[in-house]
Image (cartoon, rainbow, N blue to C red):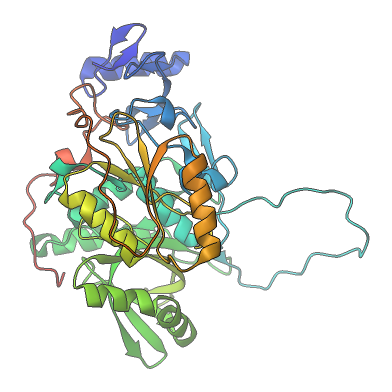
Length: 432
């Protein structure tokens, strides 16, 4: 065992483990993860009717590279830019508060503009950082561990796994003073025999969003795989996979902006003939009962559901997968597209190795920043910056542990260890 409570091994999922966690949570006792010494502390949180063990904020790099709680340093991704400002974790109650840079409601009356005095500023301060809608998708993908890849996961990831992982990741997240799980709709893995039950469940989410009287109209969030967009008399109908009976609608202006912003990415997927387009959007429920989109973000992922930003990065991720390497994909969050971040971190070497990829080797300014980041980071790095073939990857030093020590945060087993949630689910054709 790796987890220890009061110097005794802890099995989170067992009845005795849950009893011990209940007492420890009341007493404010910390858990030790003995993946390495000195042992990083972890805290206990309550979610979905049980207790789970979570890493302390900012301690991801303190864990062994083959520990489920290991995370690369935040500065290798865009996480450092928003952690502790737009994302605030509370180890005492196990919640995480997300500050959003987009609305989750529409007021019935326009608000009066704040009064301006015209006087000189009396304070010098940094404006608080808030998450864009795409950053929320990045955060949940990160929290769900969907950026991690191990060779044994090959063939085990499909939408049922993605749905379950995202729903678990949303638990305990607070947005605009409310539980994110209450307003988040992630389509279930569709099964025709369960059509009525599935519809009843998404209707319960929609019921939380129906306007009440003349007050503000509440918004929800949807995360789904984009399937297509069909023109209508007043805009467009958005179709998401695994939601054949739940079309979302957009006005003509939003539909036009969506095509303009994401058209190239959708053409890239079409040219590749593989991969998925993951959409996140805010939406409200019209008086007639159908969902209406307001703001949309999108992220491309591989067949294995690993996010990627460009063809060269995709080539590297595919090469790592084909060579049976273990790695953690790094995400951009709020950072602009030219900000230097690592593409991935290798997890199967003696020490972590940061992977840097120049998606546009001809951009001298961006290349300079990327080179500096690769040379000054705390980890050794592998890079592909020129137009030549990529160099060989660093040798694998040891395979990741088989996780016999413990389950990951949440204690319910890693998503890829149980690829079919809630019993047997038949795979269905992609048209769903």
